[in-house]
Length: 103
Image (tube, rainbow, N blue to C red):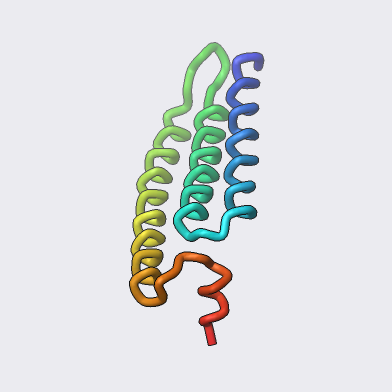
């Protein structure tokens, strides 16, 4: 149980950094970075909690994390494409200004 504590502390810190980045930043790129930090916190939590007794690791947790990493990459690629398209079309990446252009 003592080996699990540093992982859970780092997951909590990554979660706080990701949520802070999502709440404080208004730039789409920085929001995507915050979202990726949140994804990494979830993946680290999955791997840390898949650690069993006597140091054995459950391969199911690692395989789920591998698929989640691939899906996270796809999400970020689509988000970057949307940000590039918004910048080309509107000339800004500020989400407050883009929200006003909705109607």
